[in-house]
Length: 307
Image (cartoon, rainbow, N blue to C red; front, side, top):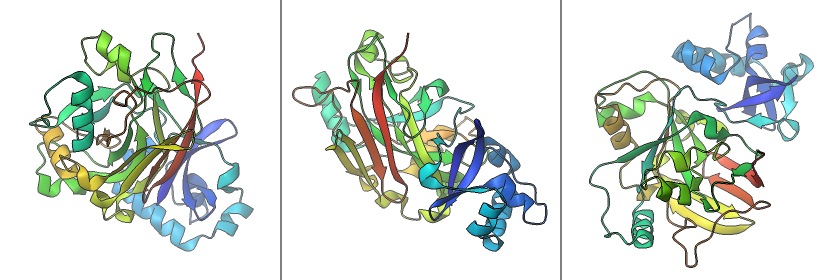
């Protein structure tokens, strides 16, 4: 399933994309024997696996036309999508230098030795940085070195701690696209720590939907691409992850509780702007497009932040 948060009557609602239509999940439940289904993505996580099962059952018996006649379906092309989780409850967990080529280009650009991390390198992004499809990536006055980083994001589906790698994938709800937009000069200004430079408002495009894990069985065989103004800047493959997803989850959950709705960005491949010669950064008026095989494509313009 492709699960979205969409706007109707100026309010966010939980939807599922089927074909070229967005179906309202709560309305879908009402039409299926009064089955109560959540109206938000976080509500779906809170309801547990039974809610996803009921949603699948409702989809099996209801048609798009029936939903449309009942006022619960809209054309995808005419629907405004928000980030699938518009405001995560916690910081987004991220991985640094988790593709060999990006690790090499980052080390070269910083004048550091060409050594990959000996363990997963974790940092976080603030929930307030999240934006959805077509929303503008913001350029703030404190930075003129705003960079791109396409990443596969893992969405956790249930609570767990001290997980073994062998069981980690059982805790994955689904996958989405994340762009870890980074203000490089802000990173350097604050002692090269990542948090501030990666947490400015409007610097975490997320979406366009969450694809449930059952629809992406080959998650370690996906292609990621990012374009700026139609020019391909990044192309990588999840086969090249230094630490694979089970290892990431197990390392993160060691002594720390993961919860349903947590987001883990798994790292970016080579091709970021600051490592290019000469360096390249985003400017107002640019258009960034992000694509991951099996998930979809997301577009975001770049604009100046309002004061």
